[in-house]
Image 1 (cartoon, helix red, strand yellow):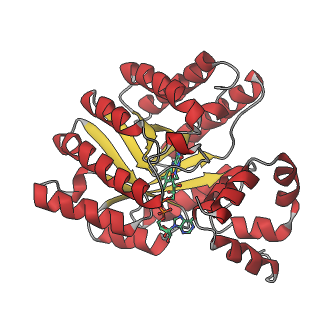
Image 2: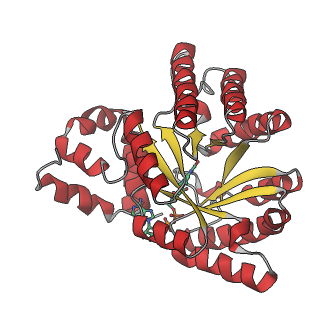
Length: 312
Ligand SMILES: Cc1cc2nc3c(=O)[nH]c(=O)nc-3n(C[C@H](O)[C@H](O)[C@H](O)COP(=O)(O)OP(=O)(O)OC[C@H]3O[C@@H](n4cnc5c(N)ncnc54)[C@H](O)[C@@H]3O)c2cc1C
């Protein structure tokens, strides 16, 4: 792992920085590149304008590791209202949620029952819930929750991280049992022995995992989301698909709001199914630091904001 990435991931977990940095106006201004605003209506508004251009979305409230069942309940209630709101507006806007935001650290069954409430409401409203994958210590528990949910609901998918060695086994298992998988490279700081290797190994692991999942996606038993901004990887997956008779409509591409945004529209026009993940909420600090860690050059973007007037 590069030093800049390691430092930014360390900073993402540093309490003092978490309290201090968000107070600076230039930091808040820089964050606007990755999220349309802190209020849920900012995210829903952005989802509406993307929808007018044919781009479906997913929304997520930033936050993790809630400290009380009451906090978990409030998060759940807010998400239930979002499901209703996007349904009233007729938007193709799904939800992405972190188990630790719904109480996983306090009590795993609590997180599971909160997730089940979201899945049930989403089912009523013909919507879909994506379960985010957090640091490696959450993977086993998150997959257990996911399996239980999937036994009851058809409209849930889970994120799997290509940087973990265990993920190949997880993909092979989930692919057999019809599922929804969102494949990502992985965003957390993990110990080396859990990882497949360096960046190149992670890219190769991602490609390999996508190939393992594509036949089930083609057969219609798996909803597969290839969640990456790596255009080279997307092209390789597409090329392999063309050679083996898997059309690009068999899977979807998911990217984050504000990252490679013009490419998202270009891929849409080229016949890919694309979906953008829009984040909102006040607890953006650790999430934002992980985005910086993915591309330390973004730090220059923050510094540049120091010298510019913050947008009104
Ligand atoms: C829809 C979605 C959901 C996700 N959910 C999870 C999750 O639940 N758990 C988890 O661990 N991770 C999640 N991630 C994050 C993921 O693990 C990666 O950290 C992130 O997507 C960056 O990796 P990459 O695949 O884009 O490839 P990279 O190799 O990191 O990037 C490829 C290229 O994309 C561009 N790029 C990538 N990131 C940025 C950035 N921050 N700013 C500007 N340009 C950038 C750069 O040009 C870079 O060269 C999610 C990502 C997406 C898109």
